[in-house]
Image 1 (spheres, rainbow, N blue to C red):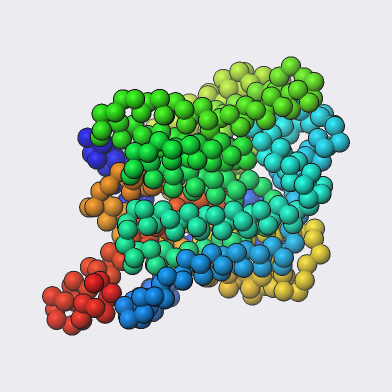
Image 2: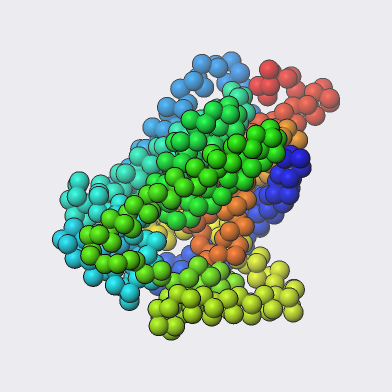
Length: 515
């Protein structure tokens, strides 16, 4: 029964990946330079050129396969090499761009400094934290970093990001082996992971994204270990990582929901109803960090409680609102969640009621005009999933605007280097999506719960941000989780091509490194 239930998202996930591959081949989402707001733009891609790149990469991959078939010891060093490469490239961007803080991260950094000085006015109702009290965990993290390394030491935080990126790459390697136990898949994942430029570029971002992805990826790994072994001790590190991830990035809750669903599916498989206790335990553990931090700051500030802030319904309402092309994209941030909260006198319940009314109006609009609804969600989808940079270039442009930059930094942010990075990420994006589509087919044909669980995290992220506030950088963590699936898909493609060629008598089996 569990297997059949997973098909309700595995098949749609495969369709989503295939459609995104097609969109990636034909069009690209991008962001112009010198923007004030996050306004996604769209342009036609170069499908013939991309197809040529795919053919070249296919030929190169075949040669790599041939080399590895005769030098299998070379693959043993790739895990270390891929981690070393990831750390070096991430550190290069950190030291090159010298990014500071603006927008949300500027508020959080300022509050962390104020809290160090005993000033807790930021917890008042009309402040940024009054609107978004869930950001208090990120403020606490920044305060800890500043106490250890000095106030506003952005470089220290950025090298924490580099460490988090190393953990992400490491966990992806381990996930790949746990899911497939295939040397070919493991090696190809290690090769593919070295091209994850969007992730490396986010090392400069003084925010919770990269650390949150690292915690989420680690939690997925330990969730997989539990599903395979039935050993409850793997749920403890999963719960701790979910707790840490939720502190710095509230969207980590998606990883929590995925592991809860997977555990219920395992209950259906094994009929071990006592596992419900483990589910309750991991949910409670994941929230302990937020509860503790809130309690500490309430005590330090000498207040009775924190405000509830803008209601969650406001993000859904905003995520279903029409785009104003000069200000935002479909479902992107437009200030609604702040405005509805302020307009209702900072009354969360009243703001929630108005937000629900906005949601009903949006749904009526979609029901009365289904063609427009399809177009709306298409635009919302491609604005997030068809941006090969996942906003990494605009983030580095924005956050380095007020820094002293070198000519080399300007070359990569504003000049020819920007185009070079964008083209590399564009080709990489298409390759990963195509291979992930094949990998999803492989997972469906060769079903195991732990494999289905990995894709559940990705599908959950896709579904959540189709109704929630849209943003390309929110998708990066789910795209990163596709790498083990993409590696399996690539080997699956090689296997199919080899089998087909064998039938025609053109290739020898060993050329495709199948044995």
